[in-house]
Image 1: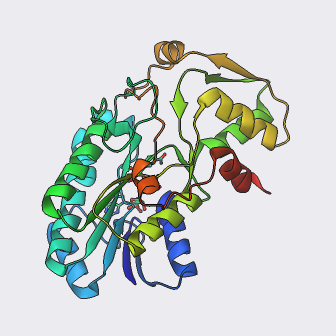
Image 2: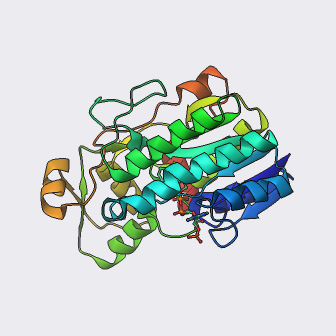
Length: 284
Ligand SMILES: NC(=O)c1ccc[n+]([C@@H]2O[C@H](COP(=O)([O-])OP(=O)(O)OC[C@H]3O[C@@H](n4cnc5c(N)ncnc54)[C@H](OP(=O)(O)O)[C@@H]3O)[C@@H](O)[C@H]2O)c1
């Protein structure tokens, strides 16, 4: 399959490239905005017209959640308009578009895991811009799009919370994490595998793709510290206390694990449990 990967130098993009290479696909990997700036419609159309991919995987995004609150225009330009540009260009070349999205399209008040057919209600600039990107992709490319929502990524490329926790546990007497914020932490290696399964066997729609199970941030941090062979105590705080003291610029969903209903319905749910995924990541 001829694949074009945008944002190929990012945390997810680099593992999508590795998985595509492992499977022997014919690959055009565009690492970042200097290779192709997806906010420029003419450049996007010209790039697809030359490369004529069967499928485009869009791993490019504005991912600075708090920073988006002070730079909303830049976040919207990349996450909403950039996605629309790719979809419009795919319409001209008869390509599929696999667009990556986020659990931040939900408000986190459902109280349990979200499936693909739950109503969205983003609470931040990042979440709203990603949700607008989803809608534009559906509108511009109704019969050849897939939207893969994922959550709380960690991978070898760039910075992630897993490495931050290990580093902090080595240097601090104790750590504190939220006990009532629930997530589906996800390995970019596992996600990349399922994204390529979807690209190979496409069916239009929205898919939740996260590691199986769910945990609180406190459980997540304690598991990482233990797996790293450390004994640093990890203390509990509440979501409300965290918001009151840290005052993050952007609102975050308090409970936003992802149920993989569409993958299950299609018999394609091969996502490992979050603990197994973390163990694989933390192997020295
Ligand atoms: N990270 C998470 O925890 C998380 C959670 C849920 C969903 N997601 C979603 O997963 C996807 C991948 O996230 P990630 O964390 O892997 O992202 P990332 O590491 O921040 O990488 C983003 C990529 O986008 C590229 N990029 C930035 N501006 C661009 C532009 N104008 N044109 C083309 N490329 C551009 C960046 O390259 P340059 O900077 O070199 O241009 C980089 O390669 C995103 O859709 C994100 O919303 C992430």
